Image (cartoon, rainbow, N blue to C red; front, top):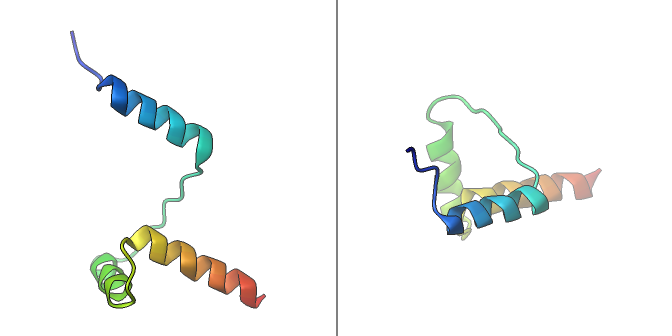
Length: 62
C-alpha cells in the first residue's frame, strides 16, 4: 500500500486549494538566485512576498 501523505498535509493542501490561486513563472537559469538575493536585500522574508509586492506596485502604476 502506497502512502500519499499525512492527514495534516492533506488538510493544508485542501485549504490552499480552496483559498489560493497558483502562478508558475518560469525564469532563465540563474535568475531565481538573483531574484532571491534582491528580495533578501530588500528585507523580504520570501521570494513569493517580493514577487507579489512587485506585481501590486506595477498594477498601482497603471
